[in-house]
Image (cartoon, rainbow over all chains, first blue to last red; front, side, top):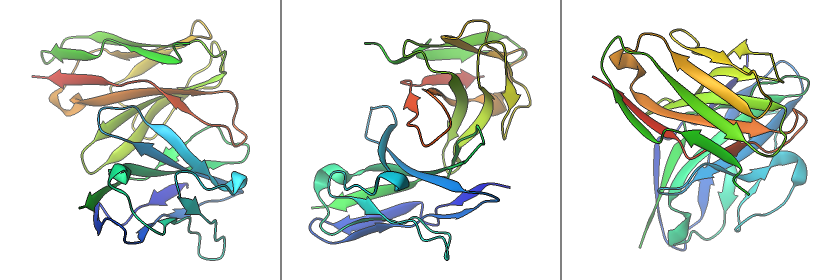
Length: 109
Length: 113
């Protein structure tokens, strides 16, 4: 069964410090991994996806199939990064998108 | 370009009442989803649809029904609302299943008293 685990409910980081939001997954096929972000009073939106190997707003995430992880990283946190972050999994040839419980990132001044 | 629109934005129901939440998308997406968002539980999939006339159960389907009579609309129904269904409901759509982005509505805050 598909499962996405985000172990931290809340992560507080000082401005300028590195950020790492953890995501682990379980799957039975070829996974597609995403990070979605929800800023205050805004709708959820895609931040990045593993297949694109891109950096968005300074964030990157690498898919580690051996550790079944897709951690989100940013070297220097900014106050505008404060938001709710969700890791999501979709399997190839599957229709569902399964989300983790989310991690609230709070950037301290 | 409206994207994904949910109606209504807020609603208060009494226990036992029924209601329908409407999700409309104008992007010609095949796939549509209904999620509920609860504190500490994240987003949980209720039902989803892979095309007009199709629906399927997600992780937490009990107490809900859905219909997809038109490609652009996905309706979520509560036949007899319960306080446990107090939540924020999100609709999402995407073009296909292969690594495509899901677009979300603004959410519907439902309170059942």
